[in-house]
Image 1: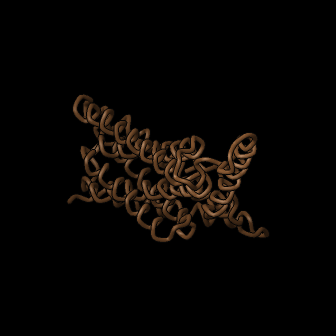
Image 2: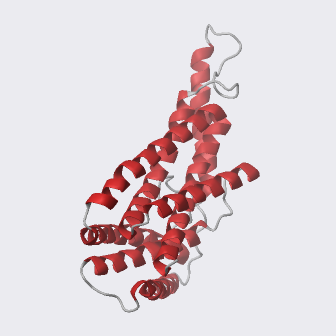
Image 3: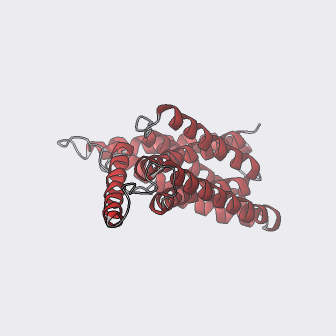
Length: 276
């Protein structure tokens, strides 16, 4: 197995795991407050739609688009995506941006859904029997829980689909990229089922930093290859690119941290659910 294939699999697995943790937080909140059946159905439908997107878009890309054109376009896209992940990770590591806090997101989502459920329950209890709040905990379908779970999983999953398609199609390993994403989602789901809570202890910012470095490295590598550049050592040069971006990120983090000599590091605060 070549170096590029290993890095590709690790990049897809890491990115998918990060997004899966964020999606799982939303599903757990929807399940606790609105009913597990609706939350699981919304999650399942979102996963099916995402899988169809990978199959419907990825296969034509691999078979009908010239590889050099594909690598230049996808390499540029990976650079934009990777640098965005890397920028945010450096800002968080240096204390310039609040760390992503799944605990806060979970509590906020539960609070919002509970308030929505209480309003719905109050509106439906007049003239109804004592079994109000249908769909909360009695196994019946709840439209709000379904939509929230579907939206959370679909939006977080779109970024995974983008990474799977770009890395998999450009490298000619779409099946491997899809498998790595599926394994990451499965691992996070199993851990979530075991701990039965949001995965706040996962070192998410470190994972995002690593994924950003790998995506950026692939972007530079494939833009060069698609433009006709032959890297020294072929695929092994990816390791050098990763090392360069690791060093650059470390230097940037240290320099930006020193720019706040009299301030404490930013504590964990709620952030946007869909922010990578």
